[in-house]
Amino acid sequence: MAGFLASKFKEHFYCPPGFNNHFGLNEAEYQSKLKNILLNGHDPENVILLEIDPLQQNTAIDFIITEKITGIAPLHIGDVRRDGRDLYYEKQGKKIAIKRIYNRVIFDELVKRTDLKLDFNLTEDVDVEWAGHPQLVFQDQ
Image 1 (tube, one colour):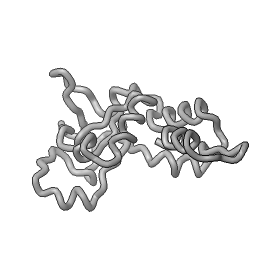
Image 2 (cartoon, rainbow, N blue to C red):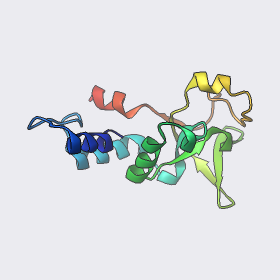
Image 3 (tube, one colour):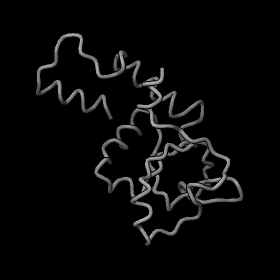
Image 4 (cartoon, rainbow, N blue to C red):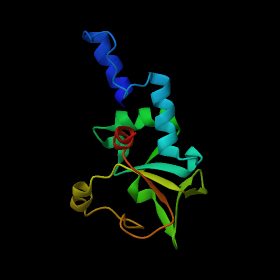
């Protein structure tokens, strides 16, 4: 995430006084706003960060930091199940309803992966909210 990377840059490189990488917010304000944007009032257990094999991606560190900040766990797209218009995943043998999806799936990669067995298609009409990319939301405000 931007905060983690920015802190590493500041450890090793000079940054001018007053330089801010969080759209004018301090770290705590940025993290709070990010959490609010991604959760939109939902329990973190009911919001997923959707990806193909998320912890095998080059961006896995982003997903781990996002989970640390927001409580939203990364979930492999093949682990999403569909029941009518509802989506869910299983956690410790329990069905967990998915109410909101922060989609990080790259469609080109999805098309290339013929080995994936999916229970739903990203373009199907299901009863979930879709979270836009936070950077786009921050820029609009």
